[in-house]
Structure formats: structure tokens, C-alpha cells
Image 1 (cartoon, rainbow, N blue to C red):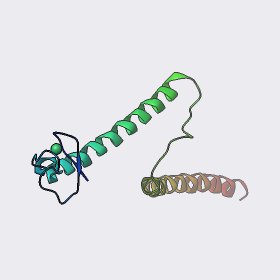
Image 2: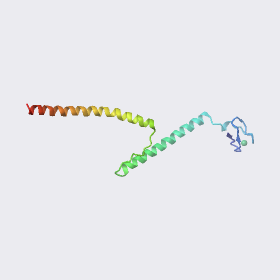
Image 3: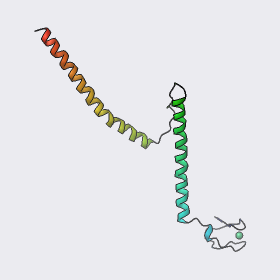
Image 4: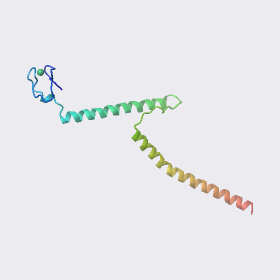
Length: 117
Ligand SMILES: [Zn+2]
């Protein structure tokens, strides 16, 4: 339905002129630019809500001594991406721990080897 901008009469989508007052209805139809604007506005709305959430988290973390991140709502996709990044980041950490472990066991092994000879 197209609403007449002049008299607010509802006209069928196919109507080029208002059935009641004859006003041209073409400008009332949403153009591609308007549709794009709507999408962009929706995106900015989402960003705003995200920003508010981040601010709330920051207030929680800086405010009291307790940290609450339990009620972060995250899309499943970004959760998966985060987990993958986490897993990749843990690989070098594991390598470092392995190297430290092998050095420590090497030192102790050498010590005990020298003691019981
Ligand atoms: Zn009209």
C-alpha cells in the first residue's frame, strides 16, 4: 500500500496517482537510496546497542571488584571466530610451556644423573 503524502489515503501499490486527491504518488515510493539509508540506519542502530553493551561491561569491570561478563550476547558466528582465534593463540603458549618444561626436566635430569653416578 502507498499512503498519499497529501491526504493520507491508502492507495494500491500500482497506483501512480492518489485515488482521492490525484497527487502523484511516485515520490512516496521508496527509492534505492532510501532503502540503502534504511539499511545503513539499521546498522548504526546495531552499532549503538553494541557500544552501549561495551560501555556497560566497562562500567562493570571498572566499577566494583567483581567482573561480570556472563551476560554478553554474541552472535554464534563471532563466538566461533573468537574460539578459533583463542585456540590459535594457545598454540605458541603451549610451545613456550613445552620448551620451559623440557629445559627444567633437562636440568633436573642432569642434576640427578650427576648425583647418582
Ligand atoms: Zn491523496
